[in-house]
Image: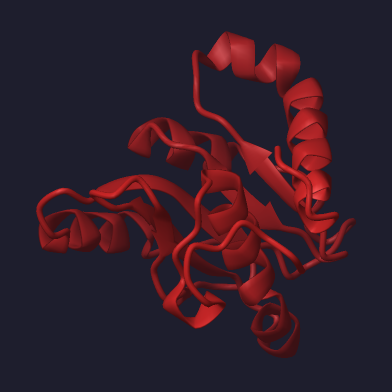
Length: 163
Ligand SMILES: [Zn+2]
């Protein structure tokens, strides 16, 4: 995948949140498939305005029970000038066992709302979707449109275009 990297992928620094979120979500797809559990992590923004993502932590088949513990731990250990700009995770179990696997769950909405930052998910089919926090009413009414817009923007990244 061509992306707007600042430095090589192993150093994990990206120019945009979308690129960091997309890359982070795709990076946990293989282990999600292999172990059939969710993985999650966070995207941070550094003092120079670029984005990185934290190493993933494991969850269960259908949730990340330690999400808030991990969030608090990261908040307390962030160096000066860094902030949490988003989070990412995976959905291993496809519908109908897990009906919201190809979209965001109510728990995902709550998580993005709580940390007040976008979330990225890689679904069982390997799609990456972005969820933005906001007033609950607005989120529910425009969720499909918002998700579709995010997918188009991320598709542009895969083609090497700006977006
Ligand atoms: Zn989820």
